[in-house]
Image (tube, rainbow, N blue to C red; front, side, top):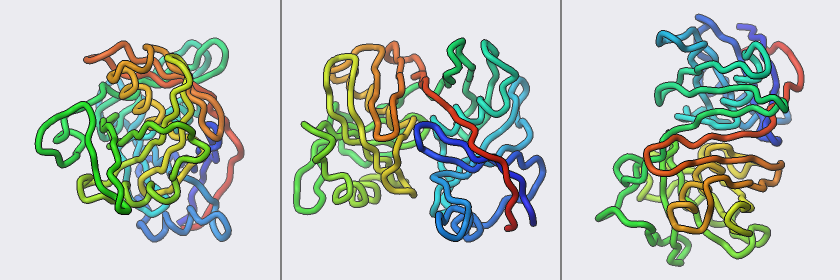
Length: 272
């Protein structure tokens, strides 16, 4: 089967976007082959766009990691989809996904904003195994006690506050915590350095991918738990290895919004 695709990225978090229609979904093995950066196209996630499933939505999108597993949400991916299909600046559209739907718009300055989700902190909603709900939790990994905060933005996240992201043990602790027994569906692991109430630095070890140059839902998770902890304001600039994102969250009961660049790189075809 031959597919046509668009290669896109948000701050170096890169995607292959397929406007699939009724095309059959590729196997996990085929997705892994496409994701290979030496023998395939190479990407952090495959974004598979299908016909709308709900009235008022422009389309329905599915997200697949480089290991072939399906993810629930992808903030930078949603922004790239909006860039691809939105008519123009100032236009708002609604995108359907596993968690429901999200609004997206092209801002006047050309950046792309997307409504991610209303954060969920209850352990069972993440999911995270805990005896009782708390502001933070301690888990054991690599013989260490690690304090983290957990939240769902449609997908599971843990956030660890560190003094310096440059020296944070992302490569060592990221894979251990991603698959920790207390995260039944695995988790994205963020390492956050707070610079001031409106500015953080962040590195994220993504579930099913590894460390990426940027993670949109990870940026939202860090900003949200930081505000819950009293460290951060409602608007937070997030510095990631690939560039900057803006997260806005007005507080409990409201959705987090993510704003940043979304770049169309090239078009191509590939055989599955």
